[in-house]
Length: 174
Image (cartoon, rainbow, N blue to C red; front, side):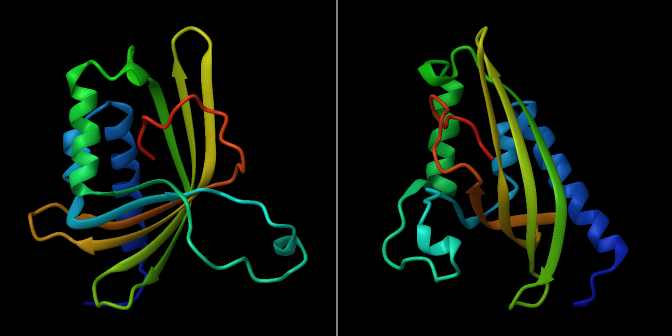
């Protein structure tokens, strides 16, 4: 496979990300989950603020806390809970709008796979007055699909820009 980033490849991966966002906004969670590889990892580490980072020192090392550290099994369990209609955090369901931009591709260390970095903005509205806005970046590993679709997500690392999470819950997908 070619390692060149062609305009066609860039457009294909961008369209994949836009279509994925639309699935989430339409609550088509099973179809969305099918976009992941069987060994996928889906993580959102807690964003921490360290004074040393502001002056150029490397960030502290050690264990990282995560808002979630899922795989396809636990993502499936989260979706199943949403499908029961009894998940209090999503009764009534949130209305979301996922925005993806600044898509940057790099060849991965495995031929045919791509590291894809992008920025996102996620707007969520629920009930009469609950509004949450999440901004951040995502780092994905995309693999060519073997099932007839174009791409599969093998890894997603989500980084929120905010250091303090103000939302009531994280019952949505990024």
